[in-house]
Length: 219
Image (cartoon, rainbow, N blue to C red; front, side, top):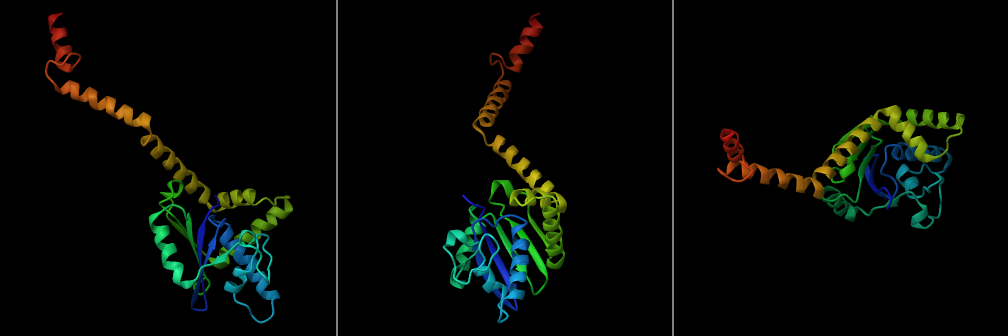
């Protein structure tokens, strides 16, 4: 199933796009950027972050020769296919997030796809990249000090610390309400109320308001 996202990386006036099968969450963008920037300092030749993203595995390690796609965090999207991915995102719910890491403007933007029922009310959130990277550094330091290495637990802490957890819970609550309203039970209830209302409007209908009033007058 995955948590599918599209990442747009703006670097030196050039935009590169990546598909991330498990990248639709608030922590992965800045975490992967932090890993890439650390690798960039170690690699010779001044490699771009875009190049490193294409060679980043799930453990945050640089693979000079890419492993199989299932073992790499990012898959580079050819420039000619970006429009199709955007159309897919705008019209369907299969791609859950559109992430923009704008290194030129120091901005990380998380766009939650409203076509996904669980994100329908989320909208878009932004943070300065340098602030976000510092938040990630502190999170990882906290995790190390408390023996927390599981990504899910770190993500939960990040959500709570940034306030995104409240927005996510509200969005999921809205989804549950909508699911209830769209359920067969709700439709049956609405039909029942419509039938009752219709009967009340027909003079003399057995069980309607007129019948009840006549019965009371007879008494």
